[in-house]
Length: 366
Image 1 (spheres, one colour):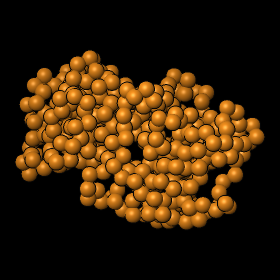
Image 2 (tube, one colour; image 1 turned 45 degrees about the vertical axis):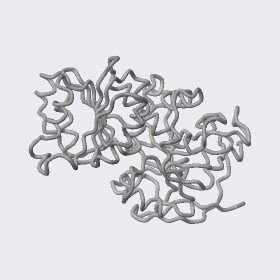
Image 3 (cartoon, one colour; image 1 turned 135 degrees about the horizontal axis):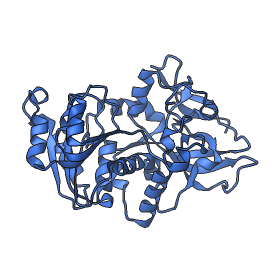
Image 4 (spheres, helix red, strand yellow; image 1 turned 120 degrees about the vertical axis):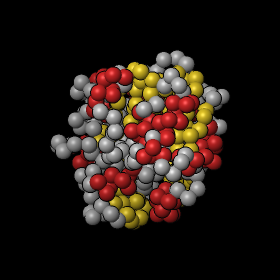
């Protein structure tokens, strides 16, 4: 096989094309993985529009798992036929951030099939910018994690999302028995957070989203933790201007929530949920919301709130998720709600944009 199908972003960054391109050959330090499953995240389309991709055209996709098909001459500890998860984070591995479990802060940090996060020279990203929404992917041999037989390729492809939720919980620094608000709770990050809550001492969840029926389904994922839903479509029409969301959160948690894990990409929700925090509480934001916060710095000072912006996870976060999955302490198969063949990836992209039906974690199977 000399060619393969791949989902490509073109130079104008607005056109996606499924096309035939050459199958990659491994360099001395590389492996080539036959992709069995790849995640499809809406953030890809958002960052394309923002111009965050430094190399175009490029193959998209940063979440994937499969089987090693070829091994470079100098790659060690990997073999043809190994089941692996691709860890597509490119970082220097030597700076203070990489050495202290803060990989995502590395000046070299970028993601295969996704974006680079600053304008410095990035030789690894230059070499490995092509992602996993293809039949094969080439990556450095040190960026594959062994995958036990007990973990499906589909779940392995979404370990990145679960690890992002792990990182959000870590930043929140929760006390045992905490109350946590989760926004955008019906999306991939929201559902991952609900599934992991029991591993971080959460006693009560408040789930915020647009539709009550979808929120009720997510509440069933809590593993026995009481989960109260707050549906925006059930608040008064002027909820944003009147502050009705903040009022509702204070009714549900009069003492305030210990943390808000916020995945909202735009609009007033982020600012309003901050008003539901307890003194000393934390809002961890991983939504990319550009709407200015209504609270002045004085409010953060007086309430001793922490606002923590975070992007992505670390390698250790991903390995922790793999251990939870391998031991059975965490199950995630029910989070995979949609599967599409690579031949229908354009239909999948359309479905992710529309979200006409509940969609937690869609995957592509080449």
